[in-house]
Image (cartoon, rainbow, N blue to C red; front, side, top):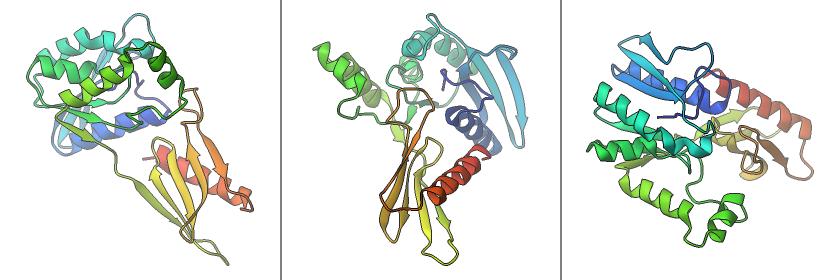
Length: 231
């Protein structure tokens, strides 16, 4: 369940959803993946995968913005009634929950895949708006989703080793797919890659520590991002 992601696509979220769906199908499962409607793609599309298959369901809601993703709950429920899954998996988003709640309505276990912070970092616009609304609806909604979910799943942290000729090797570790990772040398952090500093979707930045080789760090980041995109 990733109804705000366009698949196929070029963003980290789109690639992640595609690979997870195909990976599960490759293990012999029939996977019904709910993604966002996109021009030129059918609302229902079957993809054969060795040992299994993926059925892509493309949906939309109004207004067509991810802030209103929860309005897809009825459409998701209809797909669940048709597909009769054994379990639901939803890619977490603070304004989502349509998969987890549709599963709860039908007595189905739901897994919440957490790729972004469940708790808003201090000073974020969501945290400020939530506090301004007094009853904190965002916090109450996400706590409800966590209670309804049978389990929380976080992607495995990736780890890369960069061999530097004539110098100390560099390690890269973190959530590569979602652009949240650190670059270390000799046990000390020399750079951090994150998208939490930006409000623009799928935009991320690189913060390099003082007195580091900026060109080398940028080259490493480009290579890591390319490897993540090719997965």
